[in-house]
Amino acid sequence: MPAKKLRCTAKDCREPAQRIVGDCTFCNGHFCGKHRLLEDHKCSGLEDCKKQSHARNAAQLEAERTQVIRGV
Image 1 (cartoon, rainbow, N blue to C red):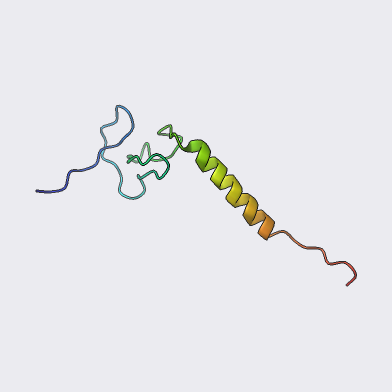
Image 2: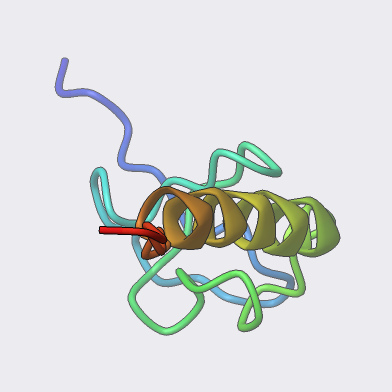
């Protein structure tokens, strides 16, 4: 018996879920191409995603900050 195809988790959507790119790690849903982005499926983890991205970007900017060496 073939494996059952996953359907999009978005409300009222019957499209097949995309493999890998359609999986949301914040709400554990499976989504089609139209609903795969957090904003498109109204993800409950959207704020957590934004906070993680902000912290990651801030750390990267701090690591790349130019240091001024005086007296050289």
